[in-house]
Amino acid sequence: MSRRDNPYSRPDRFTREAKERGFPARSVFKLEAIDRKIGLFRKGQRVLDLGASPGSWSLYAAERIGPLGKLLAIDLAPLAKSAPGQVTFREGDALALETADLSLFAPYDVVLSDMAPSTTGTREADQAKSFELFARALDVAAALLRPGGKFVGKIFMGPEFPEAKKRVKALFESERAIRPEGTRESSFEIFVVGLGRRA
Image (tube, rainbow, N blue to C red; front, top):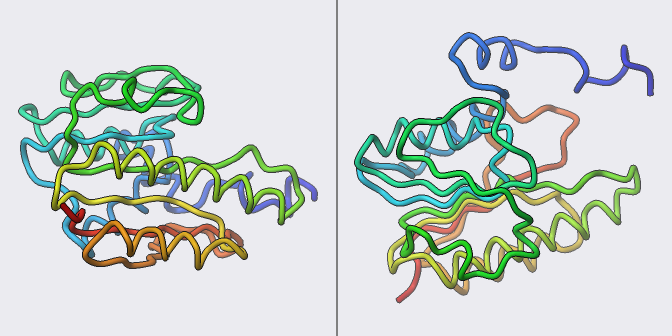
């Protein structure tokens, strides 16, 4: 695929607006749209952001939880911009880190995962790796979310999607699949949301 044919190589209106608002990536609008739909955040919450780099989700969540909130951001790569004081960044692989390493501000009110695999071009392999990342994020949420807490996890649509939804339904009072505004038309990612972590 040439650069001209690759939609990811060209800045669109979401990319431009993200830069204008001070966010490093257009992904902020996905989280913002989910937040509008389900009311993810409130002031003073504790949030875990898995797969945080380049940092748009962490920056948006930090704005919403305010200076009295706490957010732990985890990624293999550093954040692209300095974050406010309520954000703590730790470099690491969410698949390799022990759950205890992620518990700095636990119990959390919200666990976020925008983790995605380095794509290979083989759809089935990419979907399987995406499910592995999703399942890890859900395991972390199961261990570290407070009762009533919320979860948002990205997954590539594929054969494992029904299993992903089933696992979320088992842990939460309600489950929703959301493809938010800001998702590229060519993308096969979707976000599975869990509301009301069961006690």
